Amino acid sequence: MDKRELIKSAFKAKEKAYVPYSNFHVGAAVLMEDGSIYTGCNIESASYSPTNCAERTAIFKAVSEGKRKIKAIAIVGDSGYTYPCGVCRQVIREFGLDAIVIIAKSEDEYKEYTLEELLPYSFGPEDLNNAKK
Image (cartoon, rainbow, N blue to C red; front, side, top):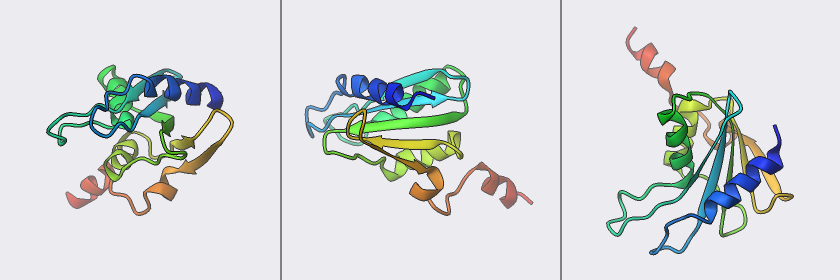
């Protein structure tokens, strides 16, 4: 996996953000298990609640194309290191329990995390399966 290429893709996606209210641009690039990359930006709405984060935009694009397993995701924003919100962490968990999460402020300055570090004691599909027993 070329981490710098994934980060570069996230920065390109950030340029497309629609953020007339917060003026806070975020971009994400998700690397799927098959090597495909999907990008996303944050998209705001005047009523706020339909706003969508960059991470979910990228992941939902991948899932809508039939991809189901995230290998890595790179996230970039306007304020140095920009971490995913709780909702995005849960969506990453749904499709990438073993994913590497890369938080970057440049192509050369980034931090890597496991999802367990960002979302300890998470709830996932297997918990629902255990509840049925």
